Length: 252
Image (tube, rainbow, N blue to C red; front, top):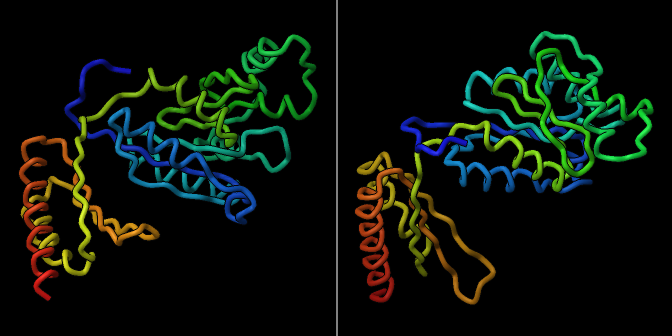
């Protein structure tokens, strides 16, 4: 990871692969983990897609996203079973051969003293031509790095380890600062002045998030910007908007 803050925007897209996610059988945990990781790296996660276990669908998504963002992170579909087809899809997307890689076999055998390479394990050693290996300190079976695409496991613990392994290879982006303001005024009362404020501060992202299920209704306004001075200025204006809306509510 670069120690110097980049002056350019670094972006990412995430592709979650798996019928089990779409069916609801498995609840995804990886999008939040990748979002946190990207935030720590000052990488802007711009999109997250979930696709079924279909080679064409996965390949089409990879090809659409890899030209759009600085990095693509995929999770799921690199295990030992017949429906683990992400490696096949990556090879298809890049138009290259998919072959068993001796270094991938060694990584798995180095992880466990007695690790016979049966058909399923050999399947996890298939790497698209030109791909680099991503270390897996949990089970040994590697992830895949192809150009700006990082292919990782769907098991959360393994995926987290792979994120840690690829972090030094990634370029960091512009640092983004954030601030938040809480209000007990409903979103509808804040919507118009917040829209005007957003237009006045286009480089400050302003989001409104209602909080339900608490003792009192609350709207949280979150502001994000790489310009600390503008962020502070806009945040104060949000506080002024909240104060004005609160007074109006009390008068009613």
